Each structure stands twice: as structure tokens, then as C-alpha cells.
Image (cartoon, rainbow, N blue to C red; front, top):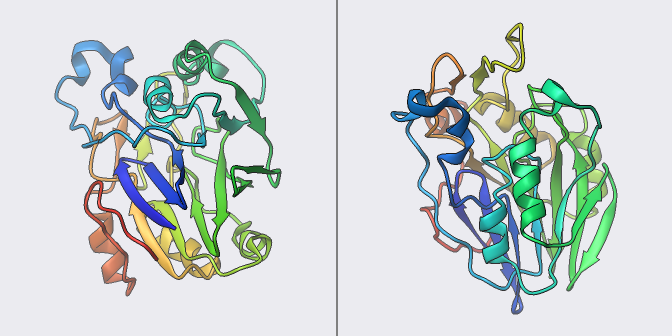
Length: 262
């Protein structure tokens, strides 16, 4: 299996003429559209499009930096589904961070399929399992376990550190070759989530290293870092890759769009 980072948390996988795309992003600034002029100076991540023709698009959660409807529509083959976490329900402020992405996904006209934790589907030779996950704001989220051709990959979206890593390793039924993990450990103060919590929005470097080690992943690829510094709304750690190395990790840090094979 070949794989590459396509920006922020976007990952593309390909094998034997088939591909998957996970959390692709084309409009990196859309996540801050609600802030108007206040967000003009927010540093945005570099992103590139996935190659067209993917057999499925996997979405970890419906925050706009992970669920970009136009990016998914451009990447997917005709008839290919979008897989996403099952909703929690609720309305008003409870769903405020999800409504834009949900509307854009609906506007793609693509078939959307929800999965709950540990559900598995088979699509064009890809085995895809939704994994339990939880982020700081508390919105519906899954991580993804993907297997094909003897290779196994975990993509952990925005998740916090949690106690399911051993189960993930067991459920994989094979060594995890690559774990794509968020590392920026952002502290957040969103207007729709008050009072603000000291809980991080996603894992920091130390927690990602713990997760990769607990899953017995052969390779850790850090993602979800290096952009979106918008104090006090979103304050990420400044050098998570340096922190990983200081901890004794040996992360794989491929260039944007650089294909690699574990």
C-alpha cells in the first residue's frame, strides 16, 4: 500500500489501482469563516487535492477542517460513498460546529453512510473499521482502521488520548504499519463551548507517542499541526515534531504529497 499526506489531516491511500481518501481539505480557511475579519491573519495549512477516483471517502468527524464536501466530491469515483460517524442528535449550540460541513456533504449528492465504533465495511477490497474516538469539544468522532494487501493503517482524526488503544491493536489482527496521529494538542476557547475547558482538542506529541506505542504501531506519522494559531480560540503547541523527537520517538515526516510505502 502506498500512502501520502495531502495536508492538515488529509491522507490518501492507494493499492492495486484502487484508492481511499481520509479527511481531505481544499478550502483551509473555511473553518474560520464564522470569525470574519478576525481570522484574516490565521496561518493556514498547505493542502493539495487527492487524485480523483477514490473508492470511498472517510471522514473522522464533521468539523470543517476534516469534512470538506467539495474536496471529497472531487476525489471520489462515481457512486463512491462517504463514510462518517453516526450523529449524537441534538440541536442549536450542541450542533453548531457541525452544521456547515453537514450541509456541504449533503450538497455533494453523494451517498453517506454512518458507522459506529467497531463497525466494519468492505469496499473494493479495502477493509474499513470505525474506531472509538473522542475530541475535546465532544462532537461525534471516529478514527479509522484500514487494511488491504497485507498493510494496516490507523488514522486518528482529532482524537484525544484514550483507553481503547489495546483493543485497536487486537482488533487489527495484524501489526499496524502506520499510525497517522494528530499531535498539535490545541487548547480551545470556542464561543459555542463555554465555559472553556482546559482539556485539549486533540492529542499532543507525548500522547500521540503513547498511543502509537500502545497500539504497537511500527511507524508514527504526525499530522494535524503547524497551522491555525488563533488565540484565544485555538492555540496549538508550537513544535510537536520536535517534542516527539525529544521523547525518543522517530516519527516519519514525509513532505506534502510525497508517496511512501511502509
